[in-house]
Every structure is written in structure tokens, then in C-alpha cells.
Image (cartoon, rainbow, N blue to C red; front, side, top):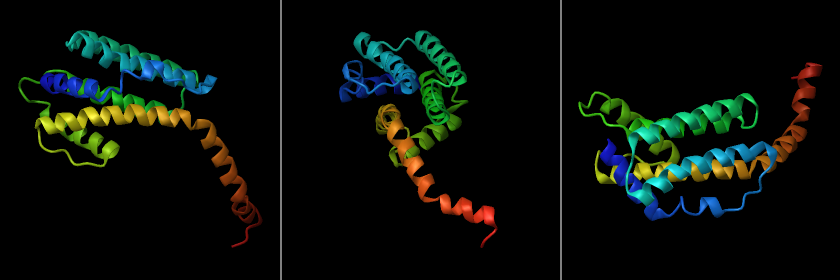
Length: 182
């Protein structure tokens, strides 16, 4: 599986998605600033690995552990919301699951199932076997989910306005419930 991640690193660095993150200007608010920081720190793993050409499993594992601890703390402090946390945790999990070696193939069915589910949910694609194409699909799904999480953070303010508008338009439903009318 480590070979898969090394190949994925090459694909990710070729797509160039990591390189632009640190220079992108975000419309950061107090609510989403922490989310952007988590994504930037995660992206840094790929940036460093693509620069060095090495995927240091021990370092990656420690970094993922720290990122998860940071995410849990930020969630407890309400600096990131539940949907962001769950998706970020899933992203860290899929990276950790696919990054490490499984020389005996004991975890292969579990890893392949989760990888397929992740790729399907993020990209709407079926995995093309255990080929280099599957590795490319995984790399692109990781890229896409990081971008999706950034877009999610970018749209939080607009989302709140849309929810408020929806609730105002649907207030008649609550009124109907209160009066007991059918």
C-alpha cells in the first residue's frame, strides 16, 4: 500500500493542487480560520513529500495524529463545525489507512472497500481494480475532498443566509403544527 501512496504523491504533486494553497487568499472568519489551518497543515504533508520525494511513514503517522488531535480540540471549542470535522476525520483516516504497509494483505479487503467508498462518494466513480489507475483515483479523490472542504468553508456565511431564508419561507409549517391544522 505504501507503493500506492508514493504513486499517489507523484500524481498529487503533478496536479499542483498543494502548491497553490498557501498563497490562496481566504475570506477567513473566526469560525472558519481554524478549518483553513487544518487543511493547510494537511496539504503540507503532500508538499513536503513531493519536494523530498520521500514518504516517511513514521513522520506522516505522527503528523496525522497531531492533525486529528488538533481537529478534536477545535471541534470541542466550536471552532470547526460537525460536518467539517466528520469529513476531515474521514480524509485523515483514508490517508492513514492507505499510507501504511500491509505486507500480508490482511487489511487489503477493508482498505479496498473504504478506498472504493471514498472515491465513489467524492468523485462518483467506481474504482478500477488495484491498478495504478486506482491510485490515481485515490489521489484525485483526496485532492477533490480537500478542495471540497475549502469550498465548504468559503460558503459557510452564504449557507447560514440560505438556511435563514429557508426557515423564514417555511415558517408556515411550524405555525400549522402549533395550531393543529392539517
